[in-house]
Length: 245
Image 1 (cartoon, one colour):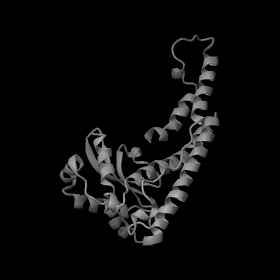
Image 2 (tube, rainbow, N blue to C red):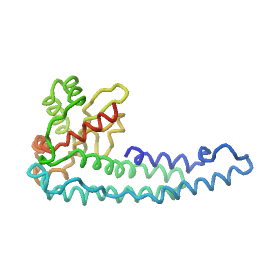
Image 3 (tube, one colour):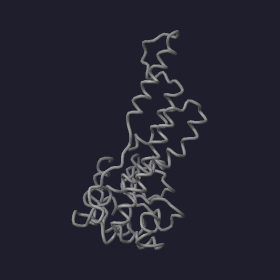
Image 4 (tube, rainbow, N blue to C red):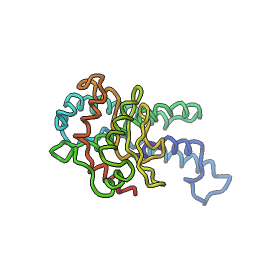
């Protein structure tokens, strides 16, 4: 997912004529022609990829009573789909953009919609019905790291809930991993900013936008945060942790 989000930076490098895709076997007189061909080929490759809404591993009603089927259906088919649609649109515009100002102007749409796609794709995997293990506490190395760094599993939950409740407006609260230090961190991001923007690997993300809970919990975000732990898929979180340490 991180690779998908950085496509705009890659395209910027190709669009200004980087010679790195040309190899070493060309001379100065023909370099412009080779460069133009290579850029067109790279843009064609990008244009063939369209991002799509991922399927869920469970039915919309499977997370009830903690998250209603109505919320899940709207959140997935309307909100996430909108991010995917607008991300593809921005990438298509970026593909044809040649003016640096036009490229820079697209960064906001790419960050917001690309981040929305990245974040929600993680969120769906971070959830599981209770009958399939949702809510079961983490085990193994991650459980040990949580106890060591936060004092206990319950103290981690309390910290995430407090940070999530304090997010002003819309955003996310995360359990992330600092790969360099091999430490866990609780962090928040605004709007649809991905956690990678803070230098952390996302392990667990909780959406605290109102569309994630308002139909069921109204404006009482702390109740939503209290109940979502009953459907957190710690097996997925553990797998993300173990693949990055």
